Length: 279
Image (tube, helix red, strand yellow):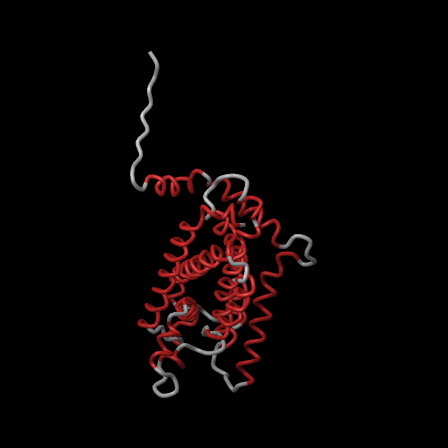
């Protein structure tokens, strides 16, 4: 007797299979991530040392900048390091994710797999770079004989916030970059502007608690920057009571990260089918 099969088509089944495929293709994810790690500093003179030297140069530059403008607060080097490292992680992750689909165009046009694995795998090497460069903070603490406060334990939460912010914004721009190649010129511009509007060379307190020089709408616009919550959180975790974590500004900034993540995933899934044809 012949065996009969029945096909059942249900609403939303395709989306459910897609997210199930993320687990089924986990081997491909690890392969792409490992490939990016191996290629990152291939044929470089000092190799992975760049993950420490790049933020170190930024730290020295911003310390001299703040001293030139008369800022000389306690633990300045540690304060700058606490701001530079998450920003370096965000800027690198955002740039790599934004260009990941175009950089892997040959792979996208040949076989099926959940395309979101490509930008996700490109973030792994950025996360490894961050963990290596975080040694700078430990060295500065030992050099200054500084004991971190108890809120240092909350640091992984703000690292997660940085991951959400970079992945959401990067995913959105990566989808747009496939169809509109103008974004390859816009990406460095976004990174450069973000460096100056994030609380690295200044503190959020000088913006949020300013009663005269900064208008209310400017404070709201400032707080919409997803990295405000991340950088302020890093400073609060590392420097303790010397840094104030404004609850309202933090909620606005963190909420914008969630919104960007939702927009990024939504637009990515909406345009994913056309990647192979357009790219």
